[in-house]
Image 1 (cartoon, one colour):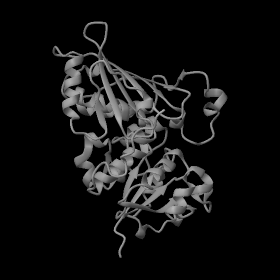
Image 2 (tube, rainbow, N blue to C red):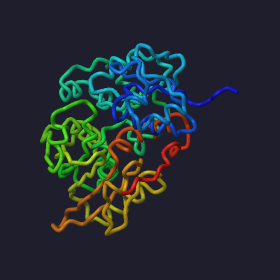
Image 3 (cartoon, helix red, strand yellow):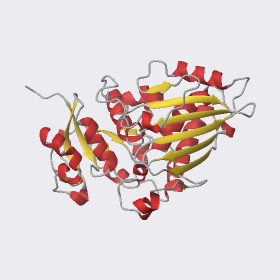
Image 4 (tube, rainbow, N blue to C red):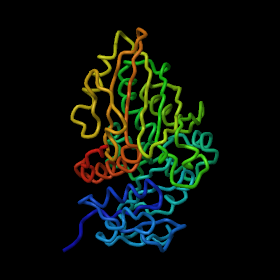
Amino acid sequence: MTDRRIRAAVIGASGYTGAELVRLLAGHPAARIVALTADRKAGQTLGSVFPHLAASADALNLPALTEVAGVAWDGVDVAFCGLPHGTTQDVVATIPPSVRVIDLSADFRLADTDAYATWYGQPHRAPALQKDAVYGLTELARDRIRTARLIACPGCYPTSALLPLVPLVAAGLIDPDAIIIDAKSGVSGAGRALKEASLFAEVAEGVHAYGLAGHRHLSELDQELGSAAGRDVRVTFTPHLIPMNRGILSTMYVRPGGGADAKTLRRHLAERYAGEPFVRILPEGHVPATRHVRGSNHCLIAVIQDRPAGQAIILSVIDNLVKGASGQAVQNLNVAFNLEETTGLGQPPLFP
C-alpha cells in the first residue's frame, strides 16, 4: 500500500523549535518525518540529542540526524526550517521549487529586503525568493498560505501582539500611533545555543527588559500594523525575560477611537475570531495566564477598560514554542495541504 502522508524534513532539528516540531509531527496522522538535519550533530540519533523524544523516534523509525547537504529532496514534500536567523536564506535557495518551505526563522518575514538589511545587519541573500514569501500568521493570511511555496512564520512576540491588534487597527477602532506593547517571554525564546545571558544564574530569580527601542521584532510589528492601517506605523515595544521555560504574556495599552470602548473592542475581536479553533476572546472580567496555554497552540485574549478615560488594556498569552513557532508552523502545513486545520494540534494545555 502506498504511503500518501506528507513527507516532511525538519531542517535544524537540534534546536527547541526543531524538537517541538518533531513532538507535534509525531502525532500528526497526515505527515511523516523523512529527514532530520543538524550539521553539528550529524550522525547522532534524535533520542540522543533529545531523550524525551527517544521513544517516539524509535516507534516512528525516525532517521538519524544528517547535514543539510545529505537530504534527498526528491523524497520530500515540505521542509520546516528551524535554523538560526541569517542562515536560512542560503539553505532555502538550494531547495528545489517542488518542495514547499515553512520557515520559522526571521529570514523571510520582512517584505522589504532593505528593511531586513537594516534590522538584521546583513544583506538579504535571496531577494528573488522573498518576493514569493507569505507572512504566515495563519488566522490573518489563510488564503495566501494555501497557495504559497514559501511561508514565513511570524516571530513569537509578534504573534501574541498582532492577533488582537491587527483586526482592531484594520477596523479603525484604535489609534495606531498610540500602541504600547509590554511583553514577557520564557527563556526558551532565546533559543538553545549557549549564551551567557541565558544561564540559570543570569535568569533565575529576576526579570529584566532587553532590546529596548530596537528589538528586531519591531520590524514585523510595524510592517503588519502598517499594512492594516494603510500607512506607516511605529509602535512602542519592550520585551522582558521571565525565569520560566515557556510562554509569552503581551500587555498592550491602546487608545480606542470613534467612541469605542473596551466592550466595543472585545465584541469586535469576538466576532472576528468566532469559530477560530485556536484563538479565544475571554469574557469580561477574565484574565489569561501563560499557564492556561502551556504546551498548546492556543491564544487567549482579554480586553479591559483602563482607569484613564479613552484607554484600554489588551492581554494576550501564547506558548512561544507552539503557537509562537512550531505549532503555528504545523497549522500552516495543514492550511497549505488542505487538511483540517487542527490536525495534529488537538493537545489541551498542560497544567499545572
